[in-house]
Image (cartoon, rainbow over all chains, first blue to last red; front, side, top):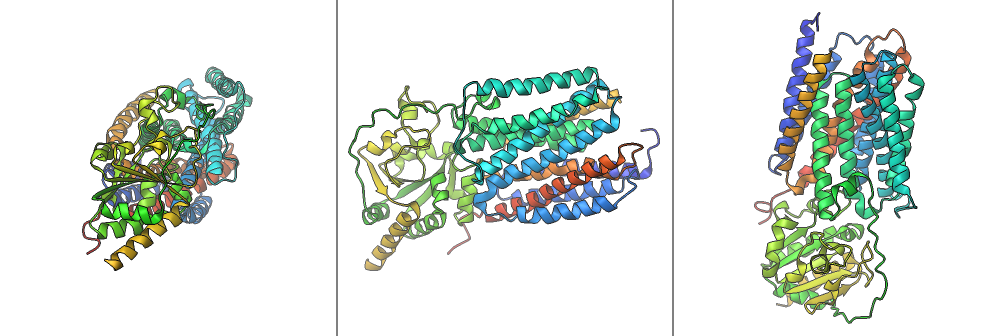
Length: 466
Length: 101
């Protein structure tokens, strides 16, 4: 700080402005009416900070920087244009890229400084590369599972948690040793290699339905590793951005684990997918009532209030645009249609809202579980499309159920419940859903997209007849 | 140097509190755009990568240049892709009022 040039002050001011703009960016994201302004603020902040950095007098060569900036932009554009159903894997991939950047910079900083690395510096450097490298491989694995290039089925073996946590523990011990003896540079690759392996092992036991929690957790790790990098290169801007990202990922992880009724420690130690219950035992053939599209259309047309509960099955069947048509034709008939969305619907937090917004359903009709649950007793029809466990009343009533205590959408309180489902198969956790056997429940067997399409056709046919 | 690290700790703590307060207010409706936006902002790590790749280093210069360049590519793709997709998503969120007669 002794020979501070005028340009240095200018650079610091761009960083300060960028920091303020980043905070405003997230503040404006709180409501859909101001959210796009938030993105704009973030873009301006980013632009200022990059221009400011390029003015840095210590930079002697620009060729590679500019090539890299252009190349990164070329890769970034298609990543910004993926389909909305592919947003979860895109997000996982971007966590991997962020973590890669942080890990590479951390590695370079170590070898440039070694062997004279002060203890505190070595500690944050270790944190940076450990979190960075486990987030890198973990996110790549998550992206692979979401993209279905890797098997989605969770793979578990005895002592898995012990092996995973043990290996991470070894990496932390080595990092601790390096803090005391930073000249032992040959140990440094280990605190990258072990977390890289840990990242892979961490995701192996995780199935598709746990992805919202995992993505949030990796988001948090990515943020924390960036904040650690901020300490290493002494950039307050990066510390703030990393802390904001870390906080965001943390909040989302806690939300998701609550919505799945997992304790937060359960989530932190990566013990997802362990709750698979062996309740597949005696499934008695109980009678269910089923209905045709014609009957379903009649009931929906006669209703005043309808709540549609979409699950990931709806997105898999690509039924959201048909659901929009259903929404339109019911709204035209004066039926109030709203959507009840469980926090873990979809493959990442908020995913279902994006899919429905893409299908042009107004966002004020998309209601969170807490907002809609009180309205079910006044609801004429609850129509469930591709959701199962999040509507299972056993979570409220049956203490022996593996999902007991999980917050659910109280669809069973509606006057009529209709469930579009391929067959009577159980949900991802293999748990039977008593909802299907209730007196007011009608099962609509078939593919979500074609069934909803048939209902829409019946509804428009009726309107012509009348 | 020591003092700087302490200042950094304060900055981190305050930013974490601001983060919690600001992000708690984000509606669950927008949690996916929230994640893609924080991801783009996080890629401000590009600043460190630029300095690493561009500065003169007495030894290890080639290593710093190679790692720094790859790091810039990775971070820039997050910046561009992250802002693009966040804005694309947010453009889809429309209120029901004035849209249709």
